[in-house]
Image (cartoon, rainbow, N blue to C red):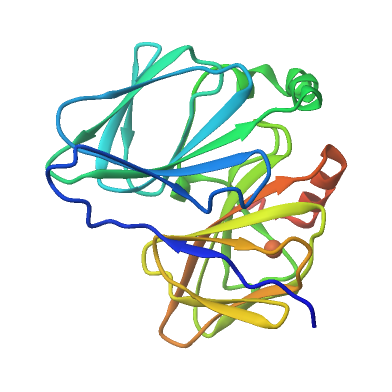
Length: 257
Ligand SMILES: [Fe+2]
């Protein structure tokens, strides 16, 4: 079979103390229009970010604690939280406590069509800050997953055109059954305790915490976890066009959770 290996990159969490601001591109040029950076900061100095009209940026906090300030509000940054500044002109992020604050900064370039589609989304989703802890996000079910699996939508497709994210959490033995979605590019980020195997066509890769992998576009892929191990990762869907977002209709919101 002519298939592609699964690109994976492990985030370096052993940054020297004397490096107050570390930044590295992760899986560079893997997904068109998407740039992922691993950033680790420490010390009193805040990094100040400003808005770029052609880009929407998602921050996923994965290790350490911090604070974000935007529009006179403060957000407590903890591992496994998402911060989306949307169209806020200026905001700052800094670490709190002795430990470095590690996060992924995911920049999504908006096409002209995306800009038009953005204007159609609920205005409360696209202007001010969206912040959530993963554990507080809405859970959903899906046919390819077992009833033991907890899946959550951490970013619905109504914030950034052609973009959605969520988490998958279960204990082994379990699996996410094989499936294909040629309408979207998919990245997975391993969260705390994650020890599973990702398969795509005739390739497989060990998927540990704090690693980012790219599911080859259109591949038949699945995820398995052995007994006594945990599956816990973020999926990130980047749809090739707006019509592809119908894939998300396979996610059924849990009304009782
Ligand atoms: Fe998938």
